[in-house]
Image (cartoon, rainbow, N blue to C red; front, side):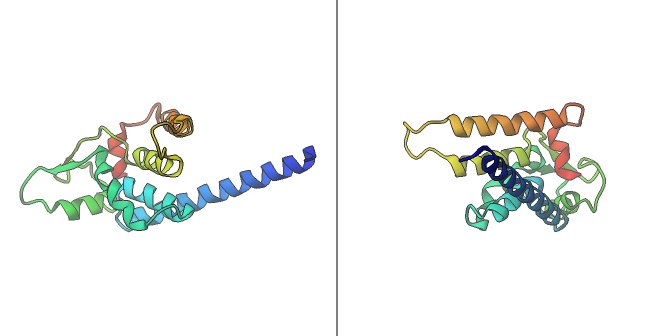
Length: 160
């Protein structure tokens, strides 16, 4: 293949990737506004954009929101309502002010991204190589950390 054609193919592929990323990003914003949590929005947007698995599989990432779970601080708190308001951005308070404690130890969108990578590039037998999954997960994590260097801890992003 001639060098010009290779350059056009690479450019076209890059444009397609950028288009998919933008589409997934816009879809994630829409899901957030509906009240889905950070881990769910990331998973659903990636899944819908790439059509990689049954959309009902979102259940596997729900527990990653808020950094890996939450707890109501009072029995009178309707945790479902409070978390939906926080997740959608309609309630701007910190979770504790809204009566909810979050763990904040795990980034839901990062975990969801790694789950999607694992699904796409999974091993099928123990002897299958890990390099593709490992390299992609490492790169996703590296980019995440680069963008969060001077930012707040991961768990607090689930409610902004």
